[in-house]
Image (tube, rainbow, N blue to C red; front, side):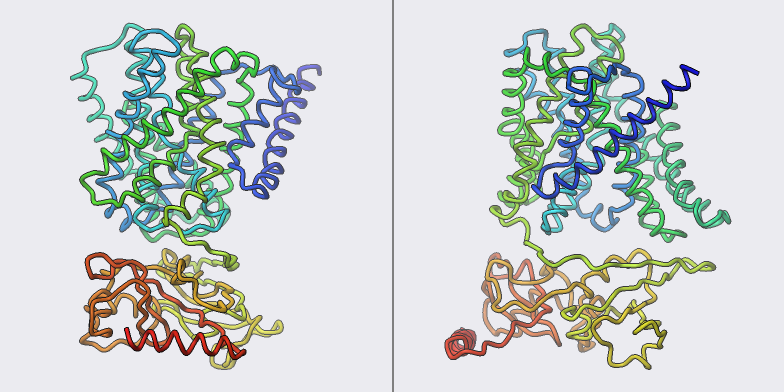
Length: 592
């Protein structure tokens, strides 16, 4: 009976720790704190070195939980990445994920050697442990603070985060193998890296196709689709590792392949994985926090903080500027990508490998990695939103996201039902904007079901249900955002949505349900500005396209490169001064 009591108490304590992590996230969101920092602190407080006093030193369990958590996080990241975004930034992102990780490790190693002593191999191992980024925390913080990143910057960070972990894991394992006496030549090591990457890509692609095929063909009960996908993702990860391929790369690509194909129960899979990855992150960081002894951290605190500062201010920026030099990124974008190099799950996870294999002074790698992660989350994590705004990389979004409901339609995969409440100031209600690929199906008003024709005109508070492709359902959010009209356009935030100047009028018309002349379908937005204005465009110029206004947000060498789409009309001024200002603005526009 005593053993049963011990198990019950362990379950109780574990559940309370996870619950504490979940509830503490509300406080973190209130103050804009990075959530991973909160979970680490919860683990530290509960551990043997904290007031909780729970004795925990099981490295094997921590490594296992960390592997599962990272595999699910990477699969979920691949599932949410659009293939078009992946193709556009694959070259710079993969360069950052490979050469960038190596450059970062090489620049950190001398600082580790100078401050902590040891050989070059040990110092390079410490650099490799902290060289990869943790973009999952960054994007949660960005979304929570209501920021929209430039598409190219966001896609680069997303793809880098999914592809840099395999190289960091490889580099760490290679150095550990060298230190344990089983190392081989560098030429053989890089051949091994190439083999692992190729096999990982093959297994990941095949795994993604198999998951998609089985999910669409197998008649599983409704509640088992999402667990099937999550478990199969772990099968892909474990199989790739078992045959000495890159499991992390394989599971990310499996998610990428599946996420860009039509699948059954797509929405339920995404929602389930979102919850599972949250629980996995909480469990992993609480366990990692419990392994830390605050008293022991003081022995290497100064050296670890210096390593963190060199990493944030020198190593990461140098790696980013060198790797992105051939890819025509602006200096602001490079600087922001440098600052968003947050360290998190992977760094502490890799630091547990020396502990697992029993390297001499292995706790030192763990302590340094922990201080680096803590410093990164405190300094960079708390200032991501500020950096994005100051560098003009993001545009504030105060509008709350609409409540979207998605329902699968058994028997086919091309369409699903997507439902929204209709807010008073939504682009759909104000302008009647709706994409050509979305078809209104029914309306619920005062608990009565109506056809779209019976419900005309739609009103505030109606619930509209549409047929739409599952992969495009999220794009409908922008049409049902409660977007009160601004009293005056903000010159720093010229549009509600942003598209590149290379986008064509036909593509824009298809997305927003606009009418465009047939001979203008292939005309780019940059050319449309020049045609409508009759002169060289400049920042702030506005031209009309049906019911929306196009705004020249960024102009380079006389060509519009970024266009803002303003869907909410400014309120007409009612006082004499406001009318005078409006008239003056119209005169300025007319006179050019």
